[in-house]
Image (cartoon, rainbow, N blue to C red; front, side, top):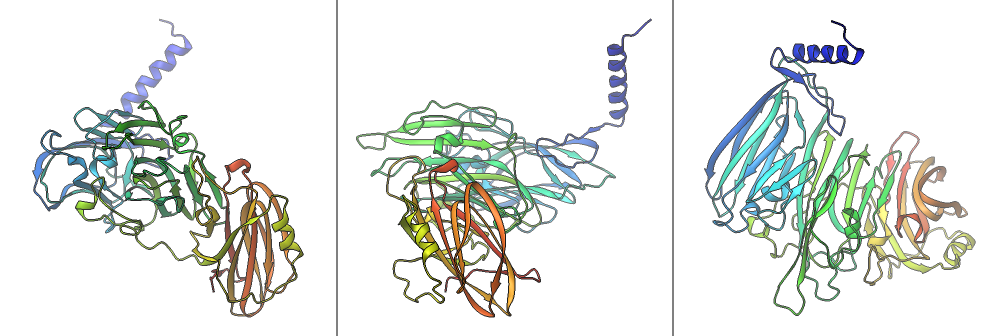
Length: 519
C-alpha cells in the first residue's frame, strides 16, 4: 500500500496522540494569556451537591497542586424559591495557601449574572450563563501548591450544585508565576459630573483579562446611564506609562447608540447581554444594563501597576474585574455586609474601599482658558516665581494613582454626553519634591497635548506637544530641601477623546523615588 504525504502525516499525528495519552494524560494548552503550564495533565473533577446554612463560611473544595482549574459550573437554590439568591452568597477562591482570596465576588456576579438577575443569556469565551441559573466559567486558574474554594452566606441559607473540572500535574513543576484574580465592587450612588467609578487597582506584573459592568439608572436629573467609558492607567510608577481612554459606555462593549435603547445580545469578546427598561413608578422607565469586555486579541499587560475606572453618572453601579498577576493580591476593596450587596441599597464611595498605595499628591487649579494657547504662553513667559504663595483658595488637592493625575476627575464640565471633557483648556499642578542633598534627579513625564515644567527658580521648560500619550525623561537640578515643581498641561479633544492626564516620576541618582507632596 502506498501512502500520500498527507495520509502519512495523519498516521504519525494519530500515533503521537496515542503515545501521549497512553498514561491517561494529555498536553495542557496554554490558552489566550500565554500561561506556562506543564506538558502532561491528568484530568480530574470535583462534583458536590449540598446545602449551606445561613450565616456560614465554609470550605467546599481543596485541590492538591500543582494543577489548574479549567471550568467551574455552579447552580444555586431555584430562583422561584429565593429572590436574588445569587447575590446572597459569596464565592472565594484561594491559591497556594494565600490568606487574601484571589477571587471574591457574589456568585452570580462572578459569572456575569448581575443585579441579582437569576439569568440571561451569556455566551463568550470565558462565561456561559444558561436558563435557571446555569453558571459556567472557563478561566484557567493555575496553582503550584493547592487551591481552595469557599462559599459564604448571609441571613439566607442556600443550596449549591458545584462541579470543578481541573488538571493535575503529578511529578511536574508549575513554572507559571501568575495567578488568576477577580474582584467585585459596587457603589450607589456614583458621582454625577465627578469621579469615575473605580473598577480595579492592582500591582504587577500582570495582565488584564476583562470585566463585566452593570448599571441601574437612578439619576432622574440627567437620566444618563454613563458619563464616559473605560479609562485604563498602566505603569504610572514604571518605565513606560500608558493611558487608554474609551469614548461612550456602550462603545466599550462593541455596540453603538445604546444610551437609551439597545437589544440584548451576547458575543465572543464584547457585548451587552442584559438591557431592559424597568417600570419604577415614574413617567419614564429606568434603564438596567450589563456589558462585558474581554481583552484577548487586544491584550493589556502591566508591569508595575494597573488602575481602571469607568465613566459614570449618579447611578447604582457594580462590576467584576478579572486579571492575572504575579505576587500577593493587594485588597483594594472589602466585601460589605450582606444587606448592602443587594441592588438599590445605599453603598457610597469609600464604604467598601481599602486605602490605595501612597504615591504622592498635588495641588491642582483649572480649567484655564487656552483656546489660542494663552495659558501655555503665560506659563512660558512668567518669570521664575521661586516659592509660590501659601494661599490655596481655588486649588484642589489630589492624590496620585501610581503616578497618574487625571485632571478630568477634578475638572469636569456639567454637560450631558459621552465622555464629557474640557477641550481647549489648560490646568496647573503643583507639588514639592524633598531632596536630602543637592542632586540631579531624573524626571519622567508622560502626557499628551502640551506640557510646560518649572522646577524651583529655574526658567520654565517647554517639553513639547504629544499627539498621543508619550513620555520624556529629563535631568532636573534639585537643591537640598524643598523644591517647588509646577506643571501646566493643555487639553484638546485629540486622539483620546479629550483625555487629560499625566504620569510623573522623579528618581534620585541612587534610584530612590521622590514622591510629590501637596504642601
